[in-house]
Image (cartoon, rainbow, N blue to C red):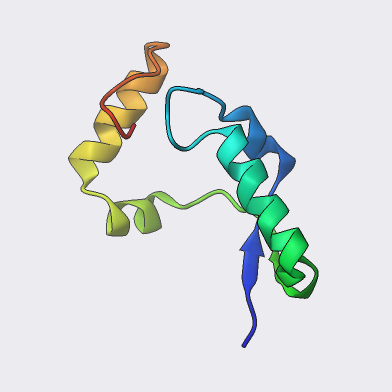
Amino acid sequence: MSIGLVYSDEYLEHNDPSHPENADRLRAVTALLQQSGAWGRAVPIAPQPITMERLTSLHHPEYVKRVRQTAETGRYWQDGDT
């Protein structure tokens, strides 16, 4: 069985230490994958921008709209997960 891996060093810039999804967590997961050998066996998948059609098939369009509006105002906190 193959493992597909979408990764970019840019993901480390998502680094709010108070949020569970932060650079330290990504570094820990990456280190574990490297130590186990899975990192070297993984099939790299280049990150790509998501289309609005795909995004709204995964998230309600109103939610996407609120996130976009939040980003446009320069705010970065919408709720505990966003």
